[in-house]
Length: 275
Image (cartoon, rainbow, N blue to C red; front, top):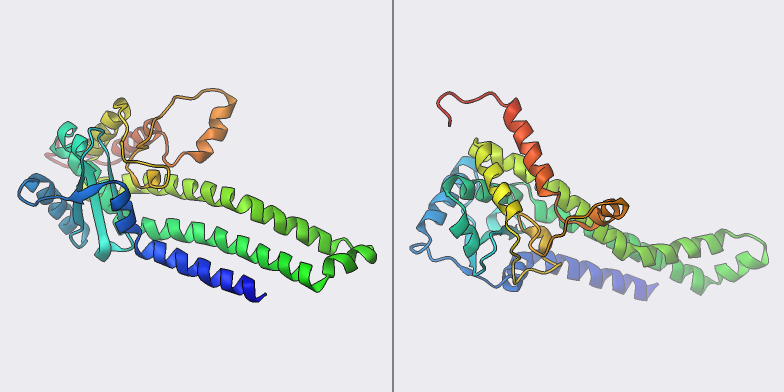
């Protein structure tokens, strides 16, 4: 029992530490460097304008030297947030498209998406620890043997459930993280459009991202959910297995996101004088 409590405390400490330093880790893994305010003046001006419109503090801005167009936001709250964009994104997006991408990333910060994702995975970890504690209690109290002698299968059932949770918890955690990530991406699309008040900007940006097949060299599965679109290699899947494989996607398909924004645009009344 004491060992289980120690394991619980260590896991909680590691989770809190990872969350507290999530921005530094993500930036380091992605090989991001601070963006020079003079060299990237247009980028700073766009972010500053969007933060004023969204009522957010100015985040730290980073550059990732990579030809693939992409971007991500990280940080435990708006006061400790950062946005990183690739050089490929700056080269391939025009002003309104870049503004749409930045608004999307700022929406992640405003919506506390890092916190939501962390809590989701932590809850699954807590379930696994509870299962581990239950199994240890059954084992050390001899409940399993006594139940078997008396013909009562309750202890055996609890042990089987506990072992199943321990085995499945990592998979459940990943699936939950992916599901939360997909939902938050869709929410950030809508929130980003609300921030810029110009849906065509983000729509056009997502179309360019869809048509571009280059991948981010510094991306990994651990940070894939942070980027605005899947930073690793993508394949078009068809058939029965595609639906199962999509459970492990960190992002909704770009075509679906584009279609949703176009539908949103069609339902919004046009602003007088807007392009």
